[in-house]
Image (tube, rainbow over all chains, first blue to last red; front, top):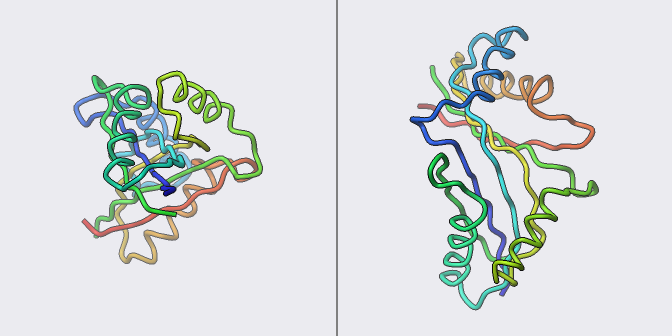
Length: 83
Length: 83
């Protein structure tokens, strides 16, 4: 079975996000003064072939831990749908 | 009212995504051979103050068009929830 995974990798809350801070101030310069607390991370979409949703989850989790996220500074979450 | 917006900015389908291709091959080297079609974009979360959900949507749309996404190469989608 084929699954589509959508993964978000975000900098942890305790960690300063300089890219987000820069975008926050740019928003103000653009006149969008009501936007704040911008945080920027990665969004990864991938296709995975697995026997079951549980197996797909396990594989995506492994991919996040070993390659996609730096667990010291980032946290991740993902959703999986059959396709 | 305060809203939380979650935005995904992804490279368009027709456009080559070299970062995704690199991650695809790394997956194979890690033994995750069933993962393919990796595409990598940005995930942005932000807080916005607006009178209504419609106004918040309008402002986030403006932010995406003017700053967050390069519409020539990228497409965006977002969800808004009151918080």
